[in-house]
Amino acid sequence: MTHRPLWVDAKETQALLNRLVDRLDSAETRGSAKAQSVLLGEKLWPELFNAPYESHKEDLWEYLVEMCRWGWLLVKPESALRSRSGYAQSVRLTVADEAAVRVATRRPERVKTSAERWRDAVFQGLNAPDDIKTAVSEYCIDMPDHPMEEVVARLNHMESLKGQPLLLREVSAQLFWGMSKVLDKRQGMVAALLDFDECPFPEAPVQLQVHIPEGRQFGVLFIENQMSFERAVRFGGAAFSGLTLVYASGFKGSAQRLRSELGCSLYYSRRGARQGPQVSSFEDWLFGRRPDREVPAHFWGDLDFSGLRILSAMRSSFPMLEAWQPGYAPMLKALLDGQGHSPEAADKKGQRSISTTGCRYADSQLLPALQARGKYVDQELFFV
Image (tube, rainbow, N blue to C red; front, side, top):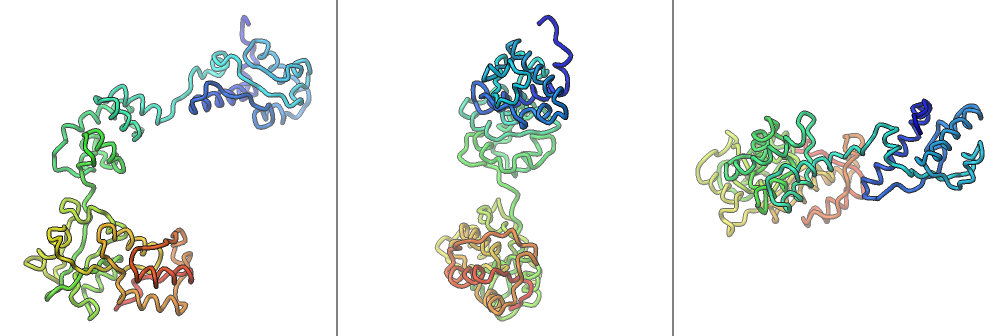
């Protein structure tokens, strides 16, 4: 072929060739040596099969026949090439000369995925042994304003922050141009870079609001919703007597870092004790300084699957945690009396059921009622 005919650049021809190159790229991504043959049909070349006139179809088919003569493509059965309407014979098409087809589409090589480009950047630019490079390459960082090579170069500075009392987001901000969330969910990468079993930089501390009333304390009550916590602090009641009240918002109360002094910030209510032996005793228990001292711990939240998931998750940090019966009992009665609301009515339709929490009362009373009734009860409606 001394020169390329104009019809090679026609939109119909380019549409077919680009779809074939797409298949080549997909095969390469999967690790296949080449793309398999494909049925020449409406899905592959709608411009031909949906052409309004038979003469137009025949012209497009002749273009394909010509590309087969050049050795770009293969058609089977070959007998279809001798017919002006060979496209109607359920032929299969194969790319025979990938380089020529790619040149024709001006796509000389496959555009690599973000994950592939990240792996290349890591193996080329990270100052680390190959096993660490392999681990880091699993955590793709694709930032629109910075090439991956720059991002990897910043990872090489991670070692200089080792041993500093920094939070994970502070580390991220220092490394990545003030952006604090880049390392979120990438603790495994940080641990690999620094050759630690776990990431040494804690996440943002859990902030707990704590109310310790005067007098002897007999237990701790985690309250899911802020309004219920505030009401209990302000107005108290016999059911709350002897309980240290803690506002644990949503799933933040399930975090393991809740029991670490670095992972937890405490804010004491001015209506209760803010220093002295009661505060010390609570912190000794919370941070495990007195493993021999057992303190009854309870959780009270919404009577729905999400609330009981919080209870279940918190039990990983507080194995003795139980659903607080004085709070849940009236809510359970309301549910059984038909006073609950549907998931759709409170924008909770995405909640998934849970099979067990590990708490005997919740598993024997609360979960079966929720599963049987299919309705929920909000904590804020009740005061005990």
